[in-house]
Every structure is written in structure tokens, then in C-alpha cells.
Image 1 (cartoon, rainbow, N blue to C red):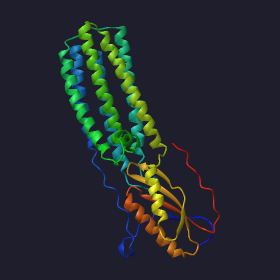
Image 2: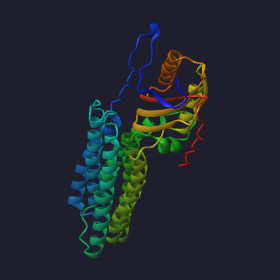
Image 3: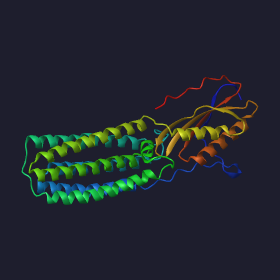
Image 4: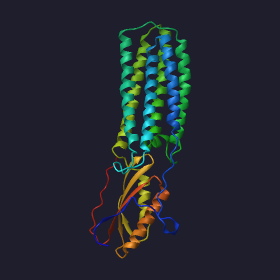
Amino acid sequence: MDNHSAPASADRVGRGRGGSAQPAARPKKERPITVIGAIIANLVIAVAKFVAAGFSGSSAMLTEGIHSLVDTGNEVLLLIGLSRSQKRADRTHPLGYGMELYFWSLIVAVLLFGFGGGFSIYEGVHRLEHPTERGPAIWNYAVLGVSFLAEGTSWFIAVRAISRGERGRTFWKKLHHSKDPSKFMVVGEDTAALLGILVALAGVALGEWLNASWPDSVASIIIGAILCTVAVCLIYETKDLLIGEGADPGVVKHIRELAARQPGVRDVRQPATVHLAPDEVIVILNVRFDPQLRAEQVAATIDEMEHTIKSEYPEMRHILIEAQTIAGPIEAEEEFAQG
């Protein structure tokens, strides 16, 4: 083995018992129940809100109807992203299509900002300048109550999906570190929806109490501001994934430790990782081996190293190992900036 570094593995397979090669198992795909539940809830709610807005003339209710309709379309786009991200790798995309989910999630966040938040603010300002007669508010109260129950159910399903993640972390840390837009996008949208329903309810009730239409219009503007704020947060989170966010630092540290435990390994530099999909990560390892090892021993150690890592973390589907000997030139280890 020469003294210069050289790629020793490119998405190799682990060795099973008896030494036969077998591909690493693909992680089992979960049914997108979070997204499907949100689609059903939002579609039913959108129809009910439009009916109530037609009878009552409420600006806030019309805004809420548009919001629910946009949310329904957004969830459909998420389903499209989920489906396309699971396409098998081919010659033009040798690492697969996993990042399509991140692309469509970014589109969803932009639509929430533009159509959801933008239209809500416009409608509120327009109704302030051109007030309309108010109809019976009983429709608004009934639909808002049912909507809150439906959105709350969808929100609960999404929150439970996030909470099932790694133990030892608060829910907010799990939400922030989640790599699955089909979960954290639904939590964000449903949270905005629940807040919007409460604001709409306050606007309708205050308008009834004051016998005025302006509280309803102001509620519409506030709902738009909520949607824009949530959309900006979702855009920020999705942007990090789309440009190549790494695995959790604790996971990366453990991978380094697993690699360093292998016989004949003298040093492992800081691994580089990138999420290609929520359950698919590429790992690049720079490993220094004992120069006394023969080539076949290095190859066997590499196979065992990959098998060990994939056994602990099945999502580490692509493991690239750059092998060096101790006698080779020692380069300064690059420190990654804290994100």
C-alpha cells in the first residue's frame, strides 16, 4: 500500500456471515399518514369556511378559507415530493432523487408565504378600505369550532410523529433538527392554522360586540402576518436541507468512534456527512491505517467498518472511505464551522 491517500471504498456493501457480499438493507418507508391526514382535514375545512364566508360576509373567514385551500394544495405537493424522492437511482442521478422532497418543500413554503400570507393581508386591507355588510355570525362560530377540532387532530398526529424521534431531547429541538419536511412542514402549517382560527374567532366576536366590521378585517391582516412568519421559518429550515445539511453532530461523533475501533485503524478524521433524503445520508471518512497491514487486511477492515456503521445507522446508505497509511503525509485536519 503506497503512502498517499486513495479512495478505498465507494458505496461498498457490507459482508454477511460466511463472507458473501450482500447489499445494505434499505430503510423501511413509512406511510405518509401525517400528510394524508392534513390533506383530508384541510380540504373539508376549506369547503366549510367558504360556505360560512358566503353567508356571513366575514373577511377573516374568507381568508381562513383561502388559507385552508392553499394548505391542501401544499400537502398534495408534499405527497408529490415524497413519491418522486423514492425513485430508484439511475445514470443521471446515481445517488437517487431524495432531494426532490426538499425542493418541493421549499415550493410549499414559498406558496404559503405568497398565496396564504399575501392574500390574507391584501384581503384585510381591502375590506378596511371597502367595508361590507356583515351577515349572521353563527355560521362563523360553528365552522371555526369544527375547524379547530379538525386542525387540532392533524396537528396532534404531526406532533406525535416528531415526538417519536430520538429520546433525551425536547420537542422543539427534535422539530428543529428534523430532516423530514413531511413532518415539520405539517406541524408548522397546522400551528399557523390553529393560531389563525383563534384570531378569526376573536375578530368575529369583537365585531359582533362592537357592531363593526373593522375587527374582522384586522383579524385577516394578523392571520396573514402569522402565515408569512411561519412560511419564513419553514423556508429557512428547508433551505438548509436543500443545500446539503449534515447529520446530527452526536451521530457523526459516534460514527467516528465506530470507525476508530476497528483493528488496524490508527486515526479517523472528522467525517463529512450530507442528507440526501430524510432516511438517506452520504458519509465520507478519511482513515489512517497501520502501514504494516496488507492490502487484503485493509479491505477486510473497511468492509467490517461499513457493516458496523450501517448496522447502527441504516440511513447511512453511502459510505465513502479514503484510506491513508501512517507513513503518508499528514494533513492538518479541517475544522468545520459551527452552523
